[in-house]
Image (cartoon, rainbow, N blue to C red):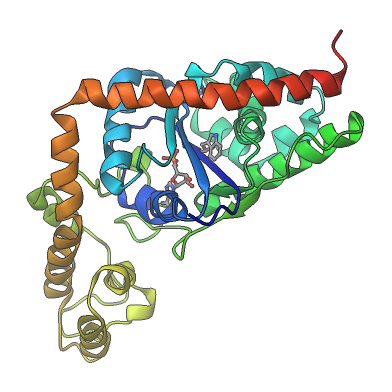
Amino acid sequence: MINKGRVFSGARPTGRQHLGNYLGAVQNYVALQNDYDCIYSIVDLHALTTLETTLDLKQNTLEMALDWLAAGIDPERSIIFIQSHVPEVAELHTILSMVTPLGKLTELPTFKDKIREQPNNINYGLVGYPVLMTADIVLYKANVVPVGVDQAPHLEFAREIVRSFNFRYGTDVLIEPEMKVTKIPKVLGIDGQKKMSKSLNNHIELAATPEETQKRVMMMVTDPARKLRSDPGDPDVCNVYTMHEIFSKLEEVEMINRECRIAGIGCVDCKKIFAKNLNDHLAPFRERRAKFSQKPQEVLDILYEGGKRARKIAEGTMREVRNAVGFP
Ligand code: AMP
Ligand code: TRP
């Protein structure tokens, strides 16, 4: 391993991961293990900011861990753990909150979205969400943070908080993290319009059965201007085509590009080919997942062990932070 530094990322325990999580983030979690010292966290404290993620925390945590392990996060090389097992993050969150301007937090697009989505549950934690996320990252002195592009405002904000802390306390204890996105930083849902997300029910789960996967793929919206089988289509505006570019062989991609434009291939056949290729691609993942799911205690042990290792790092940083602040 060429050690280029430390990677940290987290995701709320939303249960089974979907193609958006995989193509936008988890693929990078796995790839970065070759060159970095990686830490991946299931951020259960963040989950408490929304009601739907507060339910079934344990089950959703386990499901997510299964997906991460099956995708190739290797607990021998990387730390995988549950955020709340390292309570230092809450202390750091409090300290960082005092160098964070409130006005900027409430201006963040992600906060404004939440106000619209859950007008009856605008809680204090929602406002502080990016501060807690910053605490996550800097507690482990991460240099690189792999996330989907929706997290860009949070990452930029994290960098500001770091600068603000270091400036106020005349220190360089905290490190400004860099964001890292994949080739597909925003994966669209089966509606072909919005970001793939579980809450919009426009997602395709990695762990779905081949039949379920095929059913969801057949629901995908293609080029909206192509109404009839005989209409020529435009692959450049078709989300199914984008997926072919990721999951299909080059000859097939070229054939679809050509035939779609002259109505030589219809959307139904095009989607059937994609469903098959996607299922083929996910087969080894599903096999590994099935093996892990037979040993839930082993998976929990991996998370507990990861938590212990993460906590050691966190304790070191907190000693430096308390010193920098000047606590007696
Ligand atoms: P979430 O499930 O929203 O907590 O997201 C977990 C991780 O997956 C974050 O890094 C997100 O940026 C990423 N992610 C979620 N949905 C998508 C998507 N549709 N496209 C790209 N990245 C995504
Ligand atoms: N905010 C991220 C999301 O909604 C989750 C998250 C929490 C995170 N802490 C983090 C991501 C630290 C990267 C680094 O997906």
